[in-house]
Length: 87
Image (cartoon, rainbow, N blue to C red):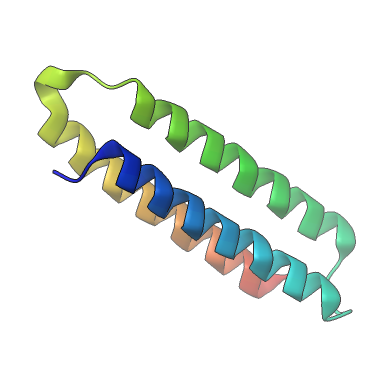
């Protein structure tokens, strides 16, 4: 199992890259600023949610928790990435 610190860093890097992608799409002049703002808010909320969940997990079921955590993070990242492409 990776250290929580490393997982948090990776999550931070991924979410900051997604946030940067929204800024780039906004600079493209084709994106709707309201949709981009909503997407940025969603990215921040997802980051806060997953970061707090990582801080408070049950140690007895760590393996199951991290497996489910990884699946949910990947699903959210894919959803956000698809939303960025639509904007």
